[in-house]
Image (cartoon, rainbow, N blue to C red; front, top):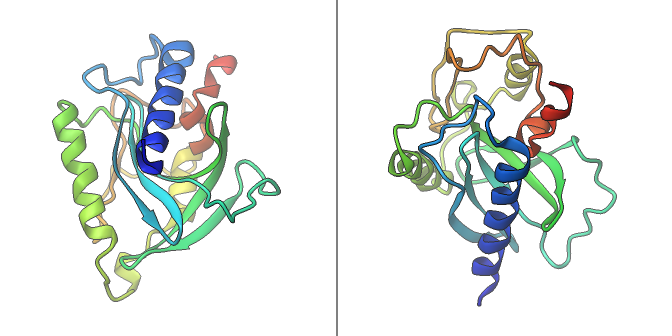
Length: 195
C-alpha cells in the first residue's frame, strides 16, 4: 500500500470512529453523507487532500517525514500558500493520525443532497487549488471574518464563494449564535461534552 493510500485509510478510520463514538445522533449531521477522502496528493513533500464527513469538509495536510510539528500548539494557525491562494490552516491532533493541519471548506454539510454532490464540490475545489491566480482583495480568504462567524459574533445571511470556490452558509439546522464552536471543536466532535 502506498503512502497516500495508507493516509486515506487512517483518516477515514479515525473520522469514522469520531462519527460513531462522538457524533452519533447529533442534529448537525447530514446522514446522506459518509466519511471519505478525495484527491490525496503530495504537495511540498506533504500529503494533502479533502476530507468529507457528515458534519464538515476540510482540506487536510499531514506532516512530511522531515516536519517536526510536535511544538505546534493545537488550535494555532499556520499559513500555507498554494498557486490559487494562501490559506490559514488550524493545527489539530487526533488519535490514530497525530498532528495534522486542516482548513475548513464547508460546515455544516446540510447543503449537500448526497455523497456525489459533496464529492463534486470537493473536486471543484481541488481543480482550482493548483491553478495560479492573481492575488487581489476579492479572492483573498478573510480568515478573521470566518472566525467571527464561527464564534457567533457575525452572522451574515450568505458569504458568497469567491474565486476559491469556498462558501459558508448559515442554515436553519445550525444557529451559530446558539453554539459557539471553534473549527477545531467541530472537527473533533468535542463540543458534545458541553451539551
